[in-house]
Amino acid sequence: MKTALPQAGLGARAFDFAVFAGLVLAVWQLAHVVGGEVAMTSPLGTLVFTARSIASGELWPHFEATLGAFAIAYVLAASMGVLAGAVLGYHRLSGEVAEPVLVAVYSIPKVTLYPIILLFFGIGIGAEVAFGALHGVIPITLFTMNGVRNIKPVYIKAARTMRIRPYDLLRTVLLPATLPEVFTGLRVGFSLTLIGTLLSEMFGSRRGIGFMLMQAIGLHHMDIIMSLTFLLVMFALMANAAMLVIDHRLHRRA
Amino acid sequence: MSDAHVALKGVTRVYQRAGQEPLEALGPIDLDLSAGEFFAVVGPSGCGKSTLLDVIAGLSQASAGTVSIEGKPVRGVVPESVGVVFQDDASFPWLTVEDNIAFGLNRQGMDAAETNRRVAQALALMGLNDFARAYPAQLSGGMRQRVCIARTLVLQPRLILLDEPFGALDQQTRLLMGDELLNLWRKTGATILLITHALDEAAMLSDRVGVMSARPGRFLEIVETGWPRGRDSTIVASPDFGRVTGRLWSLLRAESLKAMQYQTGAARP
Image (tube, rainbow over all chains, first blue to last red; front, side, top):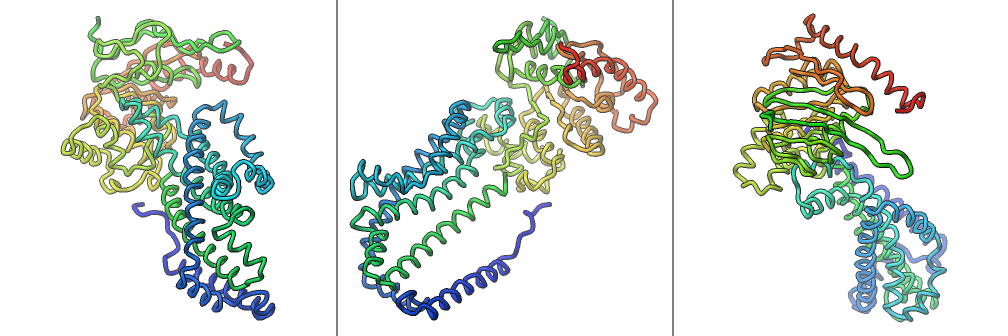
């Protein structure tokens, strides 16, 4: 066997995707026809409106604000999560103590913590970053911890028989051995951090996509709501698809 | 100092256990291996075979006694002339076959030309030429174990320690891998110490077989097989093979029974 396991061809997968996208569009159009313009903007109407608002440039400052807060939140969640996960995975006792606590904290609806976050950080980018990072950091910690914990001991033993230096052991064995799991954590954490950032913008912010959405809901601007939702879905979909490709490639080797 | 390649004198391994009396896993063991010898160790499960290998390799420290390789004492560091192959698949899944084989050479800072030459040689020797760019996940268990053996060979060890390297493989593959191991042994002139639980494997491959007792493992007897250096797996058909295997089993039967009773809790060591 020289080649990887047989996979559905690119053509077949493109076809599957086209069918799925067609179905979504059909349901969307149907909802528009049944509910009317007040309840649901049509797919075409949304597309036209989106193109127009992008061209007018009025979306850009809000997009920039969301992207900025999200980027900081994600970098924080990723670095804290990977670091904490590595420590907890390496030190078995701490890991066993921390795991149920983390899972329990994670299962709390984080919106209930929002008032506390807001009191701590105040309205604005501080609360957005904190709330976004809060969503992403726990899954990244848990995935990293499991990755470090599940390194096969024989890898380390084999490396020792090749007289490897401690720094090389970390760089050429421990890091690549944990990378697939860590990356899965980063992928899951990406979507969750985005959710957290947007939620925070919706409840306590004067800028960003979340704020725009809230304003549009208040004023019942259906076309703005649909156009923003469309843009967010496209962004999340593309980012996730790209990360999923890398994820699969890493896991196929393991 | 003796001129043996590997010399063990009074080697023991005791594990300290919190709140319990210490566990004597191994020894005392005295053993001399001469250079270029093929020595196998058989013993009941849990008798400390793998502990013995770890102590010789320098992966774990002897509690008492001395291990010396080529006249130099081994203390907690794997000597440069020693290569080890384990039972568990130790091929790195994130590296291609050729990068796996080059791993040890790269860490030692070997220059690229020499690394490539040795990797190409090892690929050819282990029949891995067609798989140089494949990842271990695309290979069978037997092929992956070849990768691990090749990764050890390129470091040109003078002593190769094998810890049940074919334990996870089916019987036919094991016999064939045994033939390949004999070829390697002849070509490299290395001393080989093979840990195995398979009596036929030990009887077929080695010059001498050390039979270990149940825990704490020590040598009950060292059986000479008397095979010629040019042997291969066809000797399993010879009457002498039956004689050697029979001798090993008659030594081991009582010990295996003891080991089984420890495991089922019928008796305490």
